[in-house]
Each structure stands twice: as structure tokens, then as C-alpha cells.
Length: 255
Image 1 (tube, one colour):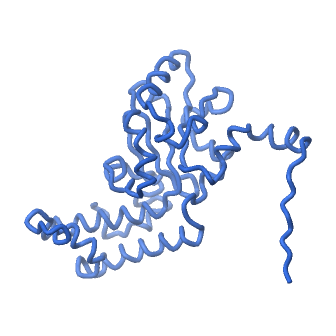
Image 2 (tube, rainbow, N blue to C red; image 1 turned 30 degrees about the vertical axis):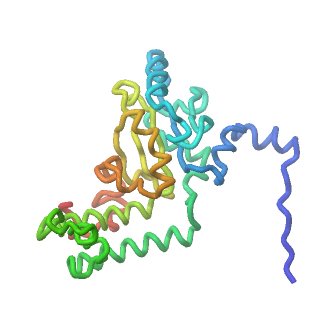
């Protein structure tokens, strides 16, 4: 017979001396995995001339709930988040953001394994060994419009891009809407898709209004179909030569 040991609740003294100095109640709320969206809006620039521009960005967003899952996920405090370019320091305070929100660790690793295997199969055998559901979609056969689909070299390119996208998607655990110095100057925040080590998988500068759609795309499971993802820039670690460059086979070098 096994017995489950109950988790002790922190005492008021524990909270005041240990928990509160490390994280505020709001930060603990953000760390809660039950949140609808594994995301934050992070402001890292607090120069004297940035405050009016910050307000303009928030006005452009117009729906923080849909952008990142709630007003409490807007991290805007110069005493805590004045990180400059070192925005990844936020994971020191919120390491939970690097955990899969919508699946177990086993499912996360399995999804990566399956996506990499599919990309390798294509690299070794071409379109004939690719997922035929994907091929039918790209050729237009699945939609009954074969005259509008891809053929030949164009098909090969699109299959490779889709399979590579699937590998990258399998690595993503959260997104960060980064309000850095460039965002405050240009009016375009940096949408960052991050993996379980806090590394950028893909990123894209977008308007604040576009950021307000991310929650809906995530909930619908179609966020990897939007231009912000599909046309996003690879993070340094996901480029060939980076720590995750092995996920992109040498045969994919020119894609």
C-alpha cells in the first residue's frame, strides 16, 4: 500500500521571508501552469522618453487577454524588469514559462522525435517518403483544386519548409511579446517563440495590434500557420551551426 505525502503549505513567515522577496504575488500568478496562455508581455526599456510610447503600444494592442492571457501577464516594472537586451533574465524569476503548458514532458519529447524523424525521412527519400497528408494539402488534391497546388521543385521546397516548421513547432513551449528599446522606437514589438531552455526558436517584429491575436491562434492550435511564425527569423541556436542546428539537416541548408 502506498501513501501520498501531502505537500506542506507555506506559513506566513515562510511567505514573508522566502517567497515574497523572490517573487511577488503577481509573478506567482503568472507562474501558474493553469493559465490559459503560456505567454508574457515583457517591457525591458524604461528610459525617460519611453513612457508615452509604452502607452501608445498598449493602446494599439487593445486586448491583453488575447495577447498573452491577461493584464497580470504584462510585466511592466522598472525595478524588476529593466533588463535592456538581456531579456532572458526573466526566466530566472519565472522558470515555469519554460515548461510545456499543454502537454507532458514525455509528449513534448515525443512530438520532437516524430517531427525530426519525418524531416529525416523526407531528406532521405524525397516527396515519396514525406507525410502524404501534407503532400496532398500542398498539391491541392486534398482540397479538390490540384490545378492550384505546388508541383516539381516548388513542391519539394514547400514540403521541406513545412517539415522544418513542424520540427520547430515541436520545440516551442511559450511566447514572449518583448517591448524592448527597438519596439518603443519603431512601434513594433518582438514576438518571440521560445523553447524549454528559454532559447528563441523563431521571432518576428509585429505591430501591437497583431500581438492581440496570438491567444486565439494558440487556443485554436493554428499559430504555426500564421505569417508571424512561418516567415519568422530563426533564433541563433536554431540556425545551422547553432546548438540546435542538428535539427536542420544539411540537406535543408538552403531553405
